[in-house]
Image (cartoon, rainbow, N blue to C red; front, side, top):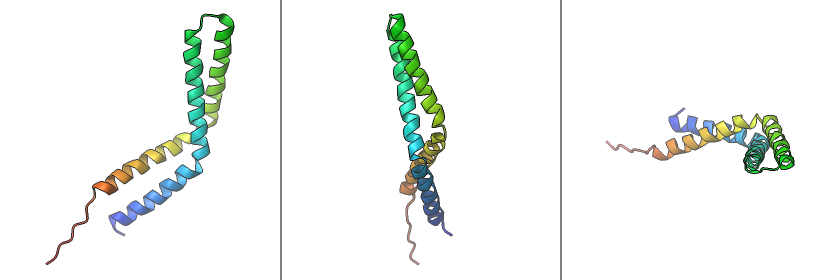
Length: 98
């Protein structure tokens, strides 16, 4: 099999991995955003009750992110898919006529 053939097979496998873990990727992102937002707001507030509320939101975000940890595999597959696409674009077809 040629190099391009192996690249097509790898792209198909990586695309299947990304699509199958799409829910976990979305959950991981939502948890990270919620945790960051809770951390940021807890640092900015001076009232104790609001700090406690923002820390609870931060913990909910962390739990959501930890529950979606398989999304890291999907993110890694997406990264490899992008790198594979860049490699595909830089490869050139050379025709040598004798």
